[in-house]
Image (cartoon, rainbow, N blue to C red; front, side):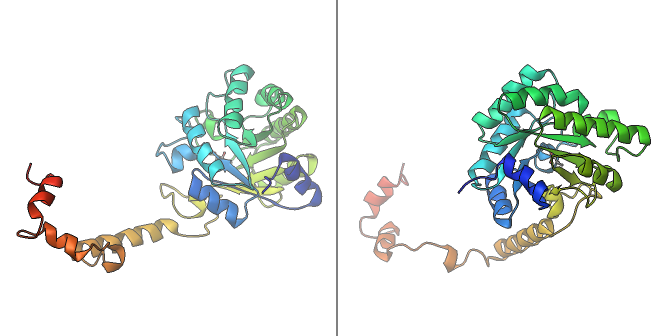
Length: 293
Ligand code: KIV
């Protein structure tokens, strides 16, 4: 099976084919997302919020990311797997970025990395691309800057902010990014950017005018319940399905209805008889089993 390449992703824009991207954080969810038909799987640093229980993405480390990305790569064979560079793995200079991005490629087996920021990250993107590491950009509401934004707020609403986003997108394109995530920006602005850029845009909370869409696995499937972002499409209620299954299991254990014969293992009755008090060979067996120790 061949993997979707970054060239394939660029060509999808040229053909007017929508790009389907979703996050996954482990082997079984990576497998399911791929089997469901995602072209690109992002091992996002949203890991921190939806899996590790932090209230932002800031505490996520390279070790966390590599560990989870390896699992997703093991569970997939076709989708392009993109590793998300966590906070402070690239902001400290392009040399650090190079070392950390290389780990996503060499250790985790990703096909590309993603990092946040436009103009400010362009030099880093260029260096990584020159070294043969494909980079997905990410602008708009970049969660690693949540403290600077004063919360998870829509970006690019004023003319000045919108112009800045245009500069950011162009800088990433010129630096060689193969695609750009647009997060939580007005839909008409995202559409304008999509028209102006030659590389695909992938939206999340950026309207239908982008070249593709990305959703966070746990938001989409009802498995993250601390809050529901406005941009989340809800396609299933897996959280409730899990709770319901566990409730029924707990009831069955407490009532003795689980396990049944079906989940139990049999034993040769003669062997069992030997273990019973007074059974043939009882003493030897009891000794072997350490019951008389
Ligand atoms: O970390 C993540 O999941 C992301 C997406 C929301 C684009 O960056």
